[in-house]
Length: 86
Image (tube, rainbow, N blue to C red):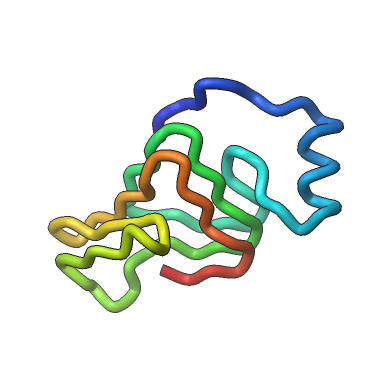
């Protein structure tokens, strides 16, 4: 997991969550396996990134990720919504 160019304060995070938006970082109850997360990514709560179908190659930039050799790559500045399963 790469870092972030900036960080959000607790009040900023609370405001984003209240508006149904995703703050920078990884949300609660999220499960991640075999994944590279680029900087400034926003991954919501209850997200599962495990490539359960064993996909080897996929291009889904509109959804914020790629899969290369079975490894999921969350793109820079991507937003993965709450409850998403990859």
